[in-house]
Amino acid sequence: MLLKLAWRSLMHRRGSVLLAVLSVAVSLTVLLGVEQVRNQARDSFNRTVSGVDLIVGARTGEINLLLYSVFRIGTPSNNISWQAYRDIAEQPRIAWTIPISLGDSHRGYRVVGTSDDFFRHYQYGQSRALTFASGRPFSETHDVVLGAAVAQQLKYERGDSLVLAHGLGSTSFSHHEEHPFIISGILEATGTPVDRALYISLEGMEAVHKPHAQEHTDLTPSSITAFMLGLVSRVATFQLQRQINQYRGEPLLAILPGVALSQMWQMLGMVEKILLLISAMVVLAALLGLCIMLLTSMRERRREIALLRVIGAGPLQLFLLIQAEALLVVLLGAAGAFSAVLAGQWLLEPLVNERFGIYLTATPLTSETLKLVGAVLIATLAIASVPAFSAYLKSINSGLRSTV
Image (cartoon, rainbow, N blue to C red):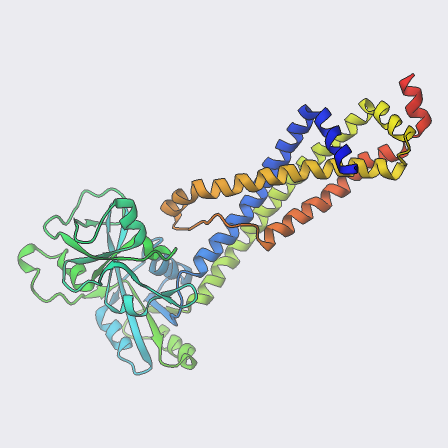
């Protein structure tokens, strides 16, 4: 009966109540949107690579090496020589390696020169291996394998021909038209940056940068951008890392992917807290607006309050009535906010994927979002106590006198 009465009272003042619901919905959309993007961005980054013990590249920052070797973000400061790669890869403690060579692109998507070991050993998520939606790995010099997002966005199919471009920009004036590539396979979607790249052999990467007459000469690369490696026993990880960092042939850097990811999120931790604080202040402003609306309505509702007291409603019932009205407004706003966040994720997912390589999914309610909504409801009860106490303290005599 109390909720029914609160609902009828809100419908009687539907104009101001609608504005209050809209204000709460917008503020909660900001709060929940920031929380969803923060969590899903972190999950998207953390599931990108799995099972890789070390990533090795030219001497640079650990985060920079992680970004360009795994996430295809940024550019390397330098390459490492093929000889240095072979010296390290041939050590008996190393089980496998994945060389990576960057530098070309196709219609804005990165081209990655690598070896067959990429398809055999690269893992993502919870140690999930790469699989092919169609076709096979590259076997010829001018074969290319597409990530799922590249094939979907550019409408490519197995057997199609494409031309690579020099450089990493979305627009290039230098195309390798004399070296067309044939699509030999398309990978299954992984929800990682693997989907947004094209993969060719290291020999193919060398061939496109040689004159057409020399493309059948020795195609062993002189340098690569970086490489990933897995160890026979992870006990030797730190020892090998120190050995690579002290390599005398040239300055190299070996990083642990998990440690580098943790460092990156530590750097972003302050930004996350600031965003959440700003969102919380927006929600607080909306709740204060709701409190002001309820307080200003008290004078207009003197007759209503008096009649409720006459028919037997006690001060506690009036207190709970105002609290119920505030909760209904916030719950309606929360429902609108959840709908807006889910719709926003569904609409913005292609854009965020295209620009930043982050995969957003329209997820149902999570424990984090439920905790935030619970905190907002508690704050609502605390703030609504002000107009609720105002109704609680109104006497029946003053209410009746106001109706005369």
